[in-house]
Image 1 (cartoon, rainbow, N blue to C red):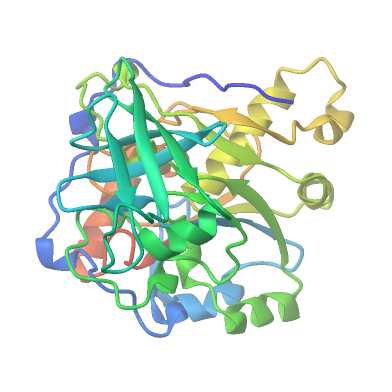
Image 2: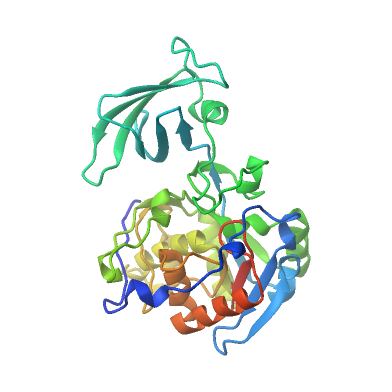
Length: 362
């Protein structure tokens, strides 16, 4: 079943309401070692109380029977480069056609991408033809190749790190979670980068459950909000999957009075997209969870004023000023408390953005 979620926003909120000053040196350029050695700012929704913790102690802050829902989407090498061309793959459209953005992509142009330093046009690993320019400036690109497309991308592509990361990533696996499974994201679901086998073992020992969803993160998620009135911002749609077993775990968790905690804004958006659908359903409330749509496209835009249907907690990184992601966090925690928490994190010299520290809101 496929559906498209609609925006839920307060129309009098401005982009500038979500601005904060961040010293440039607090933008994390490298992932921390080990993964779970990141700091964790814990904040209570009701009181605003803040404590400074470590991620490897995550299990201490959760209750037996709570459910963590993680996004298992895997970042693939979605960036293709030559000397004068750049292509960033956004979304597959079928028949080896992708919606893309990039540089020097005129309609009709054919670009060859070769393995390593061998740039012979006679034997490219992948050829790309720009077939159409879309109204928003994105391109449709037809790819030609022999073999497995994703395996070839591993040879000729690279991970499209966010522009605020200016240092080279020595180990590309660090831009994926250890549980990444379904290739399709152009950017990492970064809240999950902190998890290690040690953390999962401690969660299991305490009786905290784990479930997975898949939301393939498109670069549109990080598209800047340009309009001052945030009601004018249009989210790029992204594809998600919610397995039946995850729906069952959510139902069981709610039934026993425990909390569903989304790991990251992508898991949150997936769960709330589904939640909006079943709340609109005429099915009796006790049966709605069984009627969860299992896949679809979502362009849900969560901002203050949104009523959360599924999640009771959120584990997330620290996000860019005026971004749709800090707006989502503000919807869950409250705008003023979110900005207060960010100000505290800055005072305490937390690391920000994709490779930065984390925040647990309960």
